[in-house]
Image (cartoon, rainbow, N blue to C red; front, top):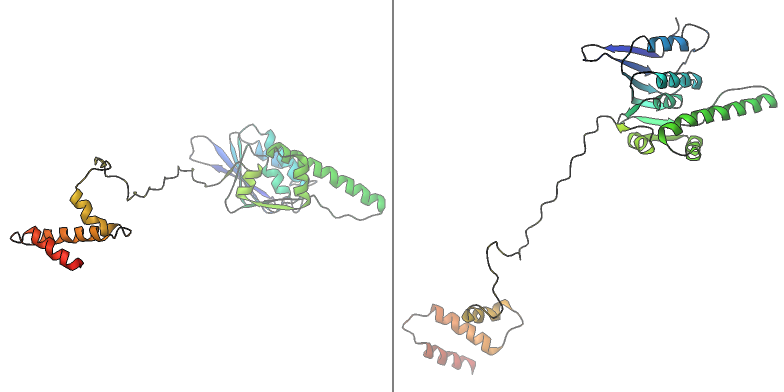
Length: 265
């Protein structure tokens, strides 16, 4: 029997029976029609059981017609289809990817879309027929992309013309995927702690009104706290206050004033 490009695994031990489909490698790299590996075989295995299914995809693409049939079968399946893009969903594999009811993409996975291609030989008429066929194939692929993403045909067509690659976040942004796998739920950002204002008033402390306060304290501070206040009177008063504070009680204040007057001459 020819090699199948898919594999089913039944998930045991869960409350509800689920199955996982693995699509690895090229889509129908050897055959799809006319022998054992046929669309009917895939459909029979898909419908052999019921319940939700998960489809893991890691494929560079392959036969667009095989991909189209798989797309149709997954869309027609009665259970919920969750597609998980493992490493790569490129070319025809991207068509299968957008068949999921929910499409999740690994943060390290990639997607790629481009125009269909083929090999052909023949005369001018043959080449014209091949070109027309490829254009129709492109339109059929666009139908799937538009249905999933909601983007305009013109934008998607241009992306296919340019062979566009995109990462997980871009896939979600463009609508090819619904969510990035393993992404943690967004947590509310913590507000940065506000630095305390050194000028902020202490709690419970009433501000002093203008004109209030100890006049003697103001005199002491004037020449030292304000660099613009340097009159001889204020300096003398400040000096006198300091000397008075430190002088012994036996020294009369009037004598200190006389000594200070001598220093001023």
